[in-house]
Image (tube, rainbow, N blue to C red; front, side, top):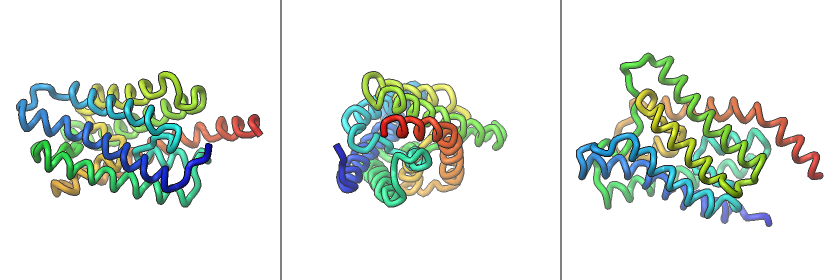
Amino acid sequence: MTYSNLQIFTVELIGTFVLVIFATGSIVYDAEFLDGQLGIPFAALAPFIALLIGVYSFGKISLAHFNPAVTIGYYITGHISKIQIVYYFAAEIIGAVLGSLFVLMFIGDKANLGANAPNYDFSIFLIFSVEVLASAMLMGVIFYVVYTKGLRGFSGVAIGGIVGLDILFLAFISGASMNPARALAPALLSGTFENLWLYWTAPFVGTMIVAFLFRGKFRAQRKGES
């Protein structure tokens, strides 16, 4: 079944909205009410749950991007057209901003609304490389499940799981955003822009590298189906 760009826009907006509420709201809630006692494990679990919801609810309609860097990866592999990039980007950014507004209104404003921040105790080269790596691993898992399972079965667990694991093991270095929209919204509303350049460069680098590696596989797959 083919879905319209409006349907894709709608589910991407909703999915990104939910993801940002879980991903940033967990951080704000922990800071606001628990003095940070839950820490990174809680911040890793929340987006895992959000992606389970998003992938299984909307994967058939939009492939469940919820992330501009993932959208560019899907464009490189030929899954979406140029005009669809506009719909995806608009939905993801609007959904993310609405998610951060929800967090601000109903949870709180601590921890810069959950804005990503790297650990500058490490070199900027390592920070950038780790963020590229985290984004590349996310894109790799997404392409693997799309290529082998078509977002069925345990695909949501795999995609949500890699995001959770990236945050659990890499957030202490780079902040492990992997998602320019998720990084933009809380930064925009809290006025903390100093790290935004990192999250609007490294995730795209990571997903694009993997997309070019997978592009041949998807072209061969489409030829075999035609």
